[in-house]
Image (cartoon, rainbow, N blue to C red; front, top):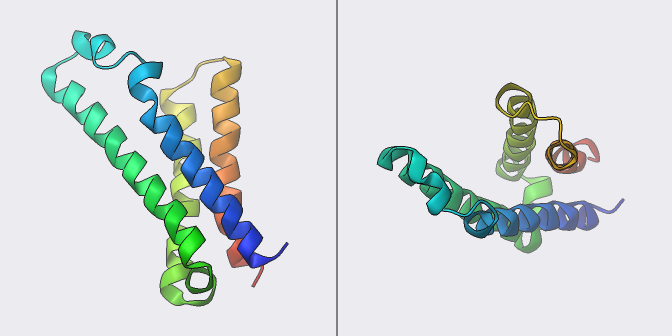
Length: 126
């Protein structure tokens, strides 16, 4: 598969998760559903989620705008390694903190693992 296609898939994966996280307020009925926790926990959950939207959008833009740099420079490869590691860790902690036997949880776990593979693929294709 051509490098630009692999990075386009990485961008689409990132943009998909940015949109998914942007929908958390509606999907999880925030902030009403967070009222049962403390103010710091409410704030941390929403701030961390908003920052994830920013990070996923930024990574998606990097994949679209700088494919050559991502695949051919040490800094670009470090970004790809970092994102692959992000998704590996995200997949692993899914089994620690979200042990729910539900098809949606299983689908998300598969999408997390897919992210690890997508971001590692350009590194392995060299």
